[in-house]
Length: 158
Image 1 (cartoon, rainbow, N blue to C red):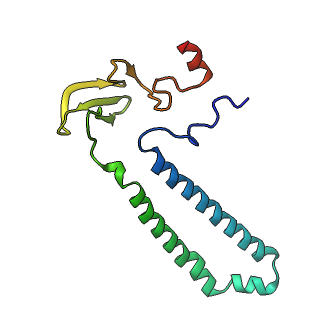
Image 2 (image 1 turned 180 degrees about the horizontal axis):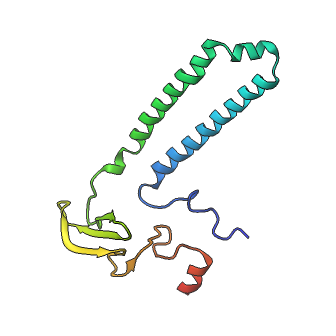
Image 3 (image 1 turned 45 degrees about the horizontal axis):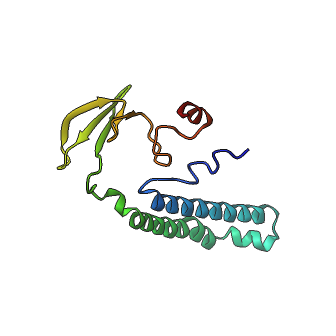
């Protein structure tokens, strides 16, 4: 029944997945917290006692909740997210395959980069040639193959 569970978005794979996943879960949690806070404030504004409604409608709470809170939270998230993902822009090291993929109007231009980061003479369209010599238009790091793990791909690979 739960074949293929958890879905890839909840169980990512790859060299940079840990930091991106952590940041994503933090953003999801804070988004849920903000939604809950807004729903509680809405409930109090609509059905709360008149004293709670007066406090929610005051100028101070509007400035705190509408300007100061978002400014502090978003600035903190920006700084934390940049610190958490700073390694994503580090240059590749070792013998890693480096490609530059450029989206054209109806196709992809794939250029293989040399050690200095310059474009090599090899350019392909729509496919990436892996070090093992096979071509792929969708590489799945979790299965180390082009098969996405769905029932059709598993059946065709057997």
